[in-house]
Length: 246
Image (tube, rainbow, N blue to C red):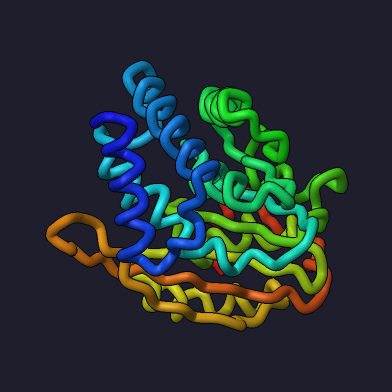
């Protein structure tokens, strides 16, 4: 795919999915450079199962940006838990240069990739945190320090919430990007929502139009608001979280 073909495909994907406001020349240039950098790096390390530009445009970039409108306005601090290949951290950083976003992952190779990608794109608003969420969430240096915590394709919601909510300030929001099993996960997470002093303020179902054939995938964005500081009991050790989810 040539650069011009990429830019056209990206514009078309954004248009079909109702996010054309992000198709600025600067953003498109950044998304092109990010995609090429990601696919080249992916030949050496496993960042994504996707192997071509069209798939990255639709299933990574567009998918992430469907949730970008839920980031509050202003200079906020955002944490992306389980950032992996930098999704949604890097797309969010590109379209919202006013925010400070931290990519957290337990795998040092992946956080090193995100740092390298941010440097390659000249993004000054991306920061790196390497370690386990359940350990860092109990650390006073990071606990309740973020206005927004987000996560995409990381774990079941009731597990994910115990990893994520301790990082969140009181009155902050947790943005969870989910797929077709989202409603079942939400039902199963009712106790976690209560124990972690949160409330669901938005349940948004969306359709991601993925290809020229207009293949549609179901997507859900959940937004939770944190009502009060997290009980010191949480997060528990990961063995407990996984064996006995809230």
